Every structure is written in structure tokens, then in C-alpha cells.
Image 1: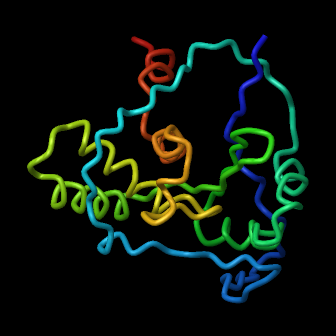
Image 2: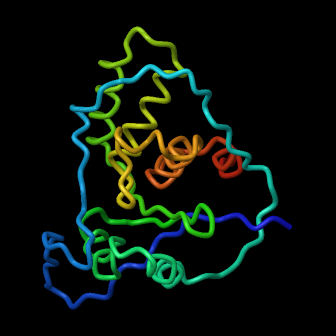
Length: 193
């Protein structure tokens, strides 16, 4: 049986009532939240084919404390967000998700909200209006990943060094946690009354 990594939401911190969390402003243990200015991202024409993700493999369910799993994995990275950073990011964005891609590669990401998605879609259309649909989709994936991957940050300057399937895979995960319906899951969830 194949064990597949599942994106798991990291549990929210327990907070006392009427306590307003402070935003992440300080650099603690090397982590600083970075933002990519999407308006500055230039479209680069590329002939790379889109990666295809196989969602048909059997899944072995396993109960895991994903925050503890993340803490163990991130211990080797002095710039990785700490448990306190994770809680501050959850307070800022509502949810933070963790995906382990292999033994050493992991990502933290968040959902995209409606306003952000409208901005991303508008930028995609402005920059790719004369391009084919696949090229537009690739650029949309890139913009979404630049915006919503919290750590390690992916940007136009480092995307070329990543494995080819990382950006489309992370974009798919961001769509799923942002409540975009996965057709296969949706078809199993719709019932006629």
C-alpha cells in the first residue's frame, strides 16, 4: 500500500478570551514572513509542460500530530517558522497547512481569499491576454504560489531551481484548502434529493 502525504491543518493555539494576538513583526530564530509583490512579477514564456498529479493511488490513513511532525522536520532549518510563528500566522490568515514533499522538503501554505484571487486572476489576464490557456494556467499557478506559500518562500528568482512539479502541485493544494471544489471529491459529495 502506498502512503501519501496529506496536507493537514496545524491546530489553532489555545488563547485566553479577549486577548488580541500581536502580528509577526520581529525576526525570531531567523524566520521573517516575506511578501512577493505580484504587480512586479513579469510573465516569462516557457515551454515546460504542466505536471500531472496522480490522485488514484491507494491512501493509507495514519493519525499524525502534524505540528509535532513539522517541528521535528523544521529543526534542521534555522530560518523555519517556530511554533509561535505558526500560531501568529494562523491568527493572521485563519489557517496554515503543512505538506511534506519528501524526507527533507516541506512547505507551509495558506488559503487564498476572494479579494486576493480576484487580484491574481486580473494580473494573470493582463500579462497573458495573447497566450494559450495552458500558459495562462501556468502563470495563474505561479502567482497563487507566490502569494500563498508561507515557507519556504517561492518567488520568480528561485522557481527555476525547484523540481518541475512543485508549483502546480502546491497551487492545487492551495485551491483545495481555499474551498475550490476538486471534481472527484465533489462528485462523491453531491446527492440528489
